[in-house]
Length: 397
Image 1 (cartoon, rainbow, N blue to C red):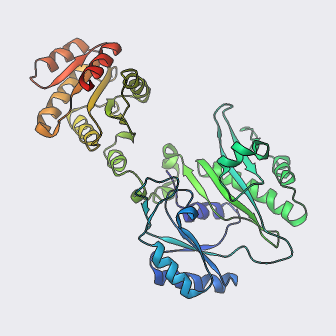
Image 2: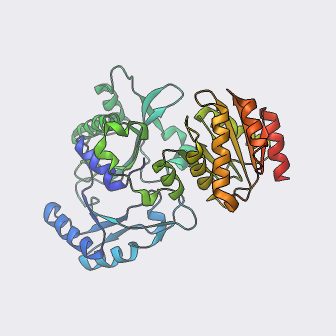
Image 3: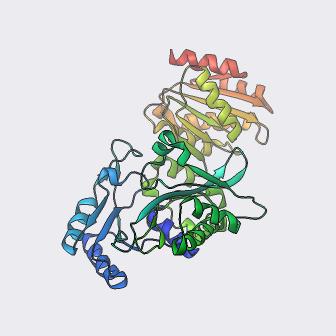
């Protein structure tokens, strides 16, 4: 589950991580009141208005702007709210902005020049350990840094048995070339950031930039946070942070129906029971010279109602030219699945306007194939993987 910047910062602050202070606003009037309150609390005269959408590169699309007075705060907030923000991480239609974060200006003059760093915490899948990735080149696309100057990307792996150790936090501060107050602040920042990552069962914390202010404070100016959906049962308060307006509507509908669905860009819908089988089915579709349109797992209860919901979800995608149903009858018998497919097909009538191939293997597979073949519905059956792939090729030819 992706979070907005303001939500990520709330979590960071709760674990003792220094952040750029901000107040969420949904109207230009609220933005002005937020700016006044921040001025009272921090003394800042300038404010940064940030669009709150689930996408990076907001500044490039005009979603992050500086206001030097209250009149500009109101004007900029009015321009950003309601706009369709297009960034390198959105579609060409962009994302509608429903709210903005009014933040303090942290690039104020002082004894030292502000410096920007990059830092993220994530899982290193090659080693099975969490790691902190960091770079002195913050405030820019980390991908371009990795491509052009890979020597400026550092990593620190964390032993799960001990968690982050003091020497590791100090090592990161050393690699940033910090000393004195800034050094101490950075070690505290790194330690608290890692505790936040573990404490909220996150799969990603990305702070770009981490800022050393002119008076040597270390704070998170931005926060990209992704929480592990599978661990949300341990964090009831975080579940309320989900903003379904930022998610694919079909995926939201599938989740509410208890189905696992991920929208893809292909032309063949795939309905399966089991994540491993879903991956194999997508390979099968590609083997047939096509592209999977989705990842849809109906789970262990592929009854008529569930299959009908799955059909409706797949057919919402106008790019779908065929549907491949690949079911392994282990927990659920194939003949029950076949009855569910037949009933769902008849219930939907002419709503189904693309070819359907059903591969059934496992318990009562032969009975299931017979049921479908004798049902009088326009569905082709298969038993072997290659047979299913050949039929996908045939209907798309």
